Amino acid sequence: MANRIPVVISQHERRAGSIADYEEQLITRIVMESGLDATLVADLKSIELDTTDHLCIEGLKGDFALATWESAPYVCSHLHRLGIPLLEIIPVDGSLKTQSGDAKAQPPKKIFMIALATNNSIDSTIKSLKDLLMSRSTPVFSIGDPTVRNKRNAVDIPPNVDSKQLPQALTNILPNSSRVEAPRQIVSALPTVDGNFPNIDQLMDELDRFEL
Image 1 (cartoon, rainbow, N blue to C red):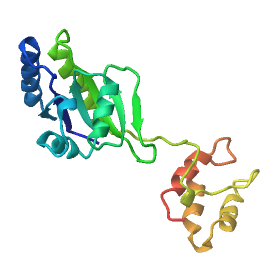
Image 2 (tube, rainbow, N blue to C red):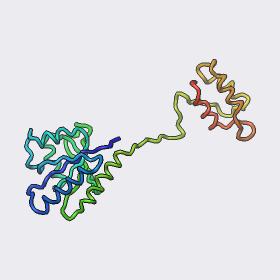
Image 3 (cartoon, one colour):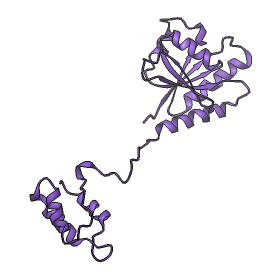
């Protein structure tokens, strides 16, 4: 789970007028937002190896967002040059992802790319970053097949076993017959489905409570 995300703003190659104003406003807004860590670097093409900007990008060990005026191929080319061998460019606008680099280097660094343009509102850019932060902060749980039970507690009950025979059947199945007293008590207390055979689902739930 991530509760912060670095945001690298790559400046335009020719900073002037409305472009410079746009970048300054964007940086100010990002700095004010909780959970977003802003870093300003030069245009990727102009960053040389072992410079401050290069060391800053290299120091981002995890995934990060990149706000840039350039295209995904441009970003891939120069990040490779700066020492990121395998990366996955993921545009936050829902465009197709781009994966590039040495397939033997795993896993790829994820770069969440935000395309900058003066006709795009800064509010929409900030919203995209906040949505990205929220999506990466939400825990995701893998829900397995509910029909598959914990193997340690799984018990295979033979078919057509009468309710009176069930405790003895459990004794034969369980590895330690001295522990069958708890299941025997459970079986006697369980409601039945048809007046004869116990409710199997409830039985299995009760068995899970014991170290069998």
